[in-house]
Length: 225
Image 1: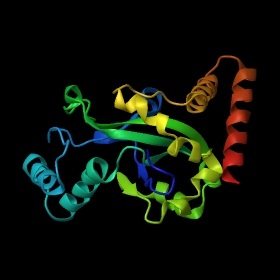
Image 2 (image 1 turned 45 degrees about the vertical axis):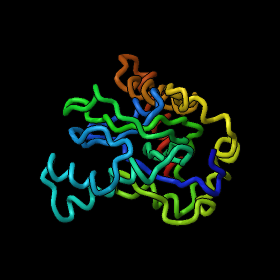
Image 3 (image 1 turned 90 degrees about the vertical axis):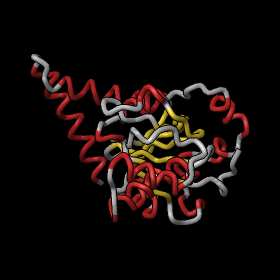
């Protein structure tokens, strides 16, 4: 298992194949990219990925370079034990990733997320609590991107207590058995609470609508500070 120093840090967007999958990422414990139709990429090198993308999508030039960079990063640069960050508005979910896996039944245009990595979500923090370099990483518009500095400069252990997860050897056993780690309770609770508040805005009870609006406004004002 990687130490905190040897683990790399990445950000990933939540719309593989153009479909929002944030809730699925958190609830089912995985991350994914799009580009279905290029087959299983297990032990496939960068040049073969380039060939498959050109054949399937007809990409050339900058479009090919961008897509190749994203797919190759997900498949060959990321590795088990690395850290992934997923932005969720003013919050960021932090996870430890497992090995690449290919899910054949999702290799189609309707699902489009056959390239996956199991992910153990370990913390949810405010984006404003992260240092400037990490905030810049999660703001990156690329589908997948790697933190360009030494991992210790991310200072994630200060906001999320990552050291105990990254350095503990037993954390990898769930991935080795091929199971799906579940999202942490904090991430689930946050999503459920926000859903309740937004639904309350449509309540027939005026008092409930007002209280929900006040809660949402207070959250917005706090996040903006």
